[in-house]
Image 1 (cartoon, rainbow, N blue to C red):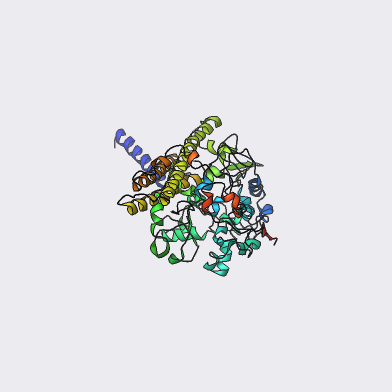
Image 2: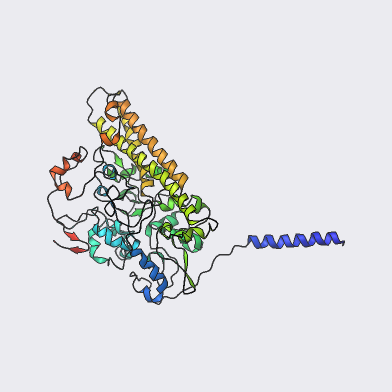
Length: 509
């Protein structure tokens, strides 16, 4: 064999070995722990002694005053333009208008840290605290993302738990220690990543996925997807009443989720969360679809998990541990979570890029919001119209109402998603563009249905045609004077005079 042949053979062997090495998949193996705690431990407090560094960072979720440019952990009212702590400059003024007739119109605040999840839902005006019989008039399903205790309730009592009244469980949870914590994401005896979420487990089964065969990196996002998702309370014609279900069977994009709801209502009709008090349109209320936006956004598509950004590794006393302060990376002045990958960029540059995306998204969010208000007002005007109607009036209005429903759902998906567009800038802006298109089509159809009669009444500055509702609550709805203060509020029934029955998890009357 000549020298040239030997060189070529050696090169081929090196390439073959290198290729074989590249094809190997090295799954990261994490240490297996024995916490010494029972597998059904719900309280966070016992973990302080076992995992002191993780527990210390977990307690950082208790902070309730650190803000970023567009959001933060001050529990301000999201519709209010008042200064912090009550309102915020980056507010959405039409929230009460758009959810009128649904408990979200009573109160909708910026969320504080995860440790406040139980405390804050006990105080939120969406759950009725005035009913003389002590009922909250919302299903127990609302506990699903507040405490992992609900999986134990279902295990003990069955699927009937979901449709039981929320207030039936007020006194069964310790607000200080049984909120979102260790048991939300871990098997508390071994500390392996584990699901407590019944709706996510159900979706994995429908998709043919077994938790044991899912990669650890994917699990580091799926544990967040137990709650940071769009979901709905199932209609009894399709399974256990009020059971939470993830609408992902058609896909994760807005059009696919919207289509999913078309036959999930009673007797196979459309699913409806609430009927808008002014337009009478059956509406969908989006939740908080961070997972759906992230999974095919720039970071999700690149394999960056939720934990990579929201639970960055930290060194304490020379040892590395994941931060358990589940919050925005922007709260760190040095943006260390971001610069783990983007080490060549300064914190100022990276922060500027995030704010640029959020600024564009927020601007379009307000435009889509106003378009939805205009669409509801157009339908309201048609509902009161008594003049000569278009020959295809009924068909035109059926389509108009569908466009109102779809336009608001698309706006709400971005409004409820907590990154202000950053998790998926392209999807966020595309979704808002579609929202405006659907809402405007609703207006155009209403004008056509009345042969142009309502055109002048619906044209102009929507803030003058329909001012934002600045104040509204369960207590205020007990007042006739309040209901007469805005033309849209006049569509609501006056509630009977009543005092609070519940204060936190204590019954006071």
